[in-house]
Image (tube, rainbow, N blue to C red; front, side, top):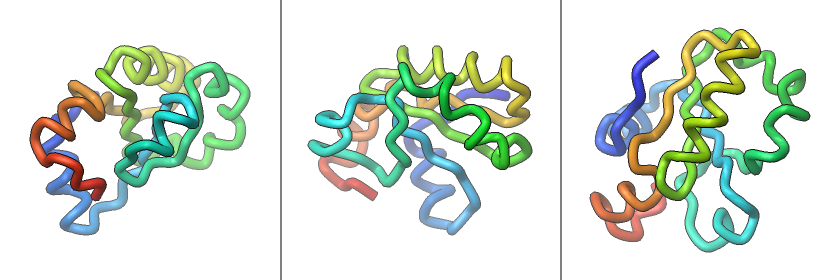
Length: 104
């Protein structure tokens, strides 16, 4: 599945589309700014795969600060059989560049 831009994601969120958002940053980063995703730090992703398995057929968007950690998480989820995992290009930094501090 292709990655997703911040504008595409914001449009999906505003239209009410079903998207599973996963924030793979650390708790202090999530606390400082987030766009509504569930916090699962990258190091915890392998341990939460069974819990997340109910989302294997859904669109899942993973994000981090810049897109690197979330690219790793995307790969882990895809290896575990998730069909529709998209990485947020540029991460939260791109979101803030595009929308300022609009957290959702």
